[in-house]
Image 1 (cartoon, helix red, strand yellow):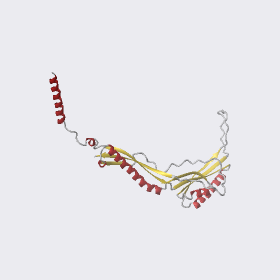
Image 2 (cartoon, helix red, strand yellow):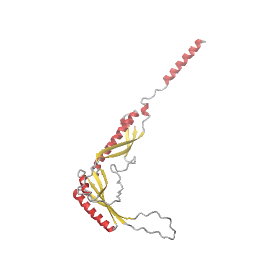
Image 3 (cartoon, rainbow, N blue to C red):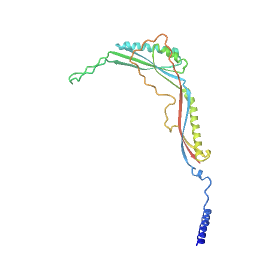
Image 4 (cartoon, rainbow, N blue to C red):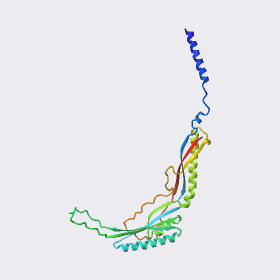
Amino acid sequence: MKLSKSLVAAALVLAFQAHAQTMPAAPAGASQASTAGTLVVVPAFGEVKHANDQATVTFAVEEHDKDKNAAAARVNRKMKEGTDIVRRADPKAELKTMGYYTYPVYPEVPPMPPQPASVAPVKPVPIAWRVGQYLEVKTSNLAELPKTAAVAQKVLQINNVQFGLSPELEKRLDDQRIAATYRNLNERIASIARAMGRPQGTAVIETVDFEGSGNYAGDGAAAAAPMVMRSSAMKEAADQMPEPSFEPGETTLQMRLVGKVRFK
């Protein structure tokens, strides 16, 4: 009885080995064959930084007076004087006047109890007028900007200061930004190829979309802040106005793209 069981076990082992030998071997490179023809969407990112070379300064003048014409006359005189000062201090600057306004100033009325419908509401009468205007100065002469601003402050107020890149410089940096983004795309493709166990040479870029990220804003430049005037009248500055301190800083230009890569 024991002998027959041993013979049966030996026969089963021999049959299993014979069946395993007749099975086809797994093809070489099966892991690579499984990724052949794969389409991979690869996002890439690039940026360049550069010191700002342009400033946009918004000057303002505002006057209050019971006589509207008197307030407007002082605004006109000071804006012309301030514009001439800036033009002499920085002849190459781009100047643009804008935002002329005239607003009535009404007295503060204490809360009144409800009036009958038959009583006509009293129309408020202005007690004064607020008149003002803005001057935008765009310049690349950053070295002399504090001095220019100081002399202009003898007549005008500084309402806003923004630093950025000039159009000429931004255009030159655009080549570097594109190159950095495309370089990052190639680096990511190489990393993906290694992760998939495939030679980088089998990757073929089918599409490069420089707008696929939705990043359509201009890099380099921020939205202008709203111009807000103070209600207090501008006081005449002293003959020697201390120069304001400016730090131009730098701007970072960014770019995103999406590439479609197919592995052969």
